Image (cartoon, rainbow, N blue to C red; front, side, top):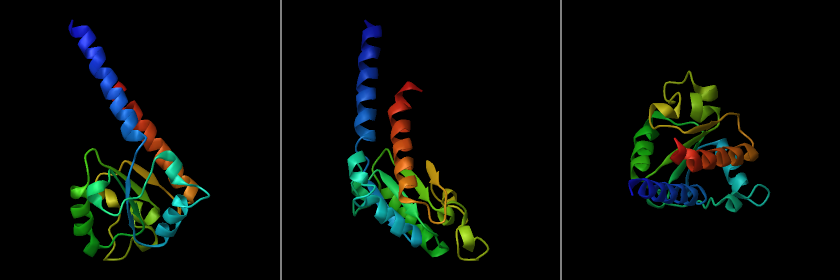
Length: 152
């Protein structure tokens, strides 16, 4: 009896993970030049909509935060606040070398050297600025991770 109940729950978990991965709603936090590439990824050539990614204007409607660009010390508290307002489960993609490590501005006193010091990052997209196709690949990689989360 318990064995069939576990199989039923596992199937529900797999279906939930599939639905969650097929409908990622990113909250864009575009700060500098990487934000232009993120907008390009949502445009017709790359078209993130076909992967189920619909950009939302509010963190309360989002489950994915894309941090694109350099983050200053003044913005750090706002990023943490917005991250805490997001839906659960929440995911973060750090886009560009400025978001990952501070980039060209890492020696500056006002730049956070890596967004992972503030919030947990699931996937990093390197480049200065990264191509829109790289962001699409990162979203597909995140979708595969979400789908396979129940098998772990």
